[in-house]
Image (tube, rainbow, N blue to C red; front, side):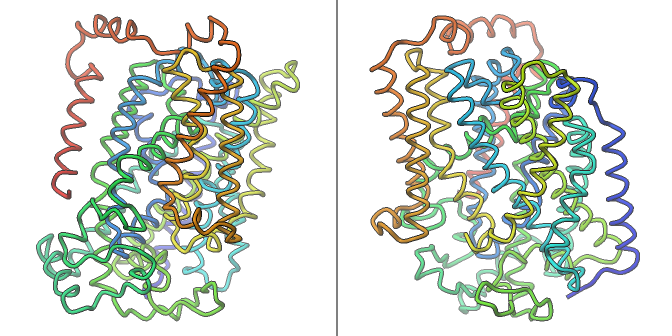
Length: 572
């Protein structure tokens, strides 16, 4: 394994100090709108890059490389599907979010339904932010820094990382978060491109050399799959199957039917209902900038397969049999990891230290830590917004704008402690970071998606139907989780997690419809202002007739869909 030289350490320290100073200098905290939504002044490039940076975080970088090393290249399905979801979001949901002037997604649920739905969804979102986004980001940062500084305990590393991310989030609010995300996204993309270049350079050829080498290893049985066949994962026989985005219906990771049901469900929650992501678009200066920003984020997702997934495949050929026992990375059974097949989450760090020269290694490690800080600071800010605007403000409506900002800062500090405490439990839940992220979202998202979708497109949906559906879905999700942990019902546990998500969604839809029809219809103002009507589409059509094509979001969306279809078709 390579190691950091003095120049690398200097680059990392200069970056971390610089980004904290820059973040604080961009703070806006004169009012609650400034602090939580950046004053609603974000232009489309900032919105798009911030969305991309918050999504392609350190946990995503490590997760993509890890699953690609295990030949799960079809993990890219989650990336390109984001384009489709973002287009749907920009057309239907975003106009209602921005015109309502809400701070949070639970607040929108209150506008459409009632306060019960707001409180419940806000609580669930806060828990999800801590367990998924923040903790996963800290976990990745701890993996990398533990390799750099093996003598320092993981607990100390996690605390230092959390404090660094909170250093500019607490005083600066959303504007500080987004302004630093722009820099971090640029550095992250540059670092990923450099890593891909050096990986191909060490391989000694381009794409064809990679595919030929992969075929040779697969034919000779040199690729180690461990117990993956016994666990139900599809085992590819050649390089074309490795890069195929479609897998058999019985594949444990992502069967073909999951592309039609579970993946869009999870994607819709993440991009259209999750405060962590939507808050960036809520800060847009107007609807057009919000829509253009969402489409720009989708465009940035397309090259992910080349610069973030492919390096994990290259690691199969470059580092098979590499002895990494000297890293002393612990395994759940108490042993030490000796190769990447035992601990695939180390794939990305190993790529960094094995391939990159001095100076560039420091830059890319700084980029990885930047991505971690970006996602962690973003979740701190979004969760503190939920706590402050959905709970504190409602408990004490007399609080001034500055007092609300102070409450948000205190909430952020509490979240730092909670997220840091959860990090050690991540590997106990799943041996794959990407698997952990998708598993948690699969259980938590269906009830929320049902409430948002029916709320926008079905006028008869009411507050009672929404809260009954949300509570029932939450109870079923908890039952599925505990059944899997304690092995209560094998017939339930054996269902694929994407099938569970789809089933849970359908159940929540049925419950919401039944409960709504059994109770009084919603108030006319909730239906009039917060449900979609075809008249809105026709009105927009007239408004956009005078716009040039590059300002018409519909034409831009079509171009983006064509690009997506081309890339997906190539790897189909």
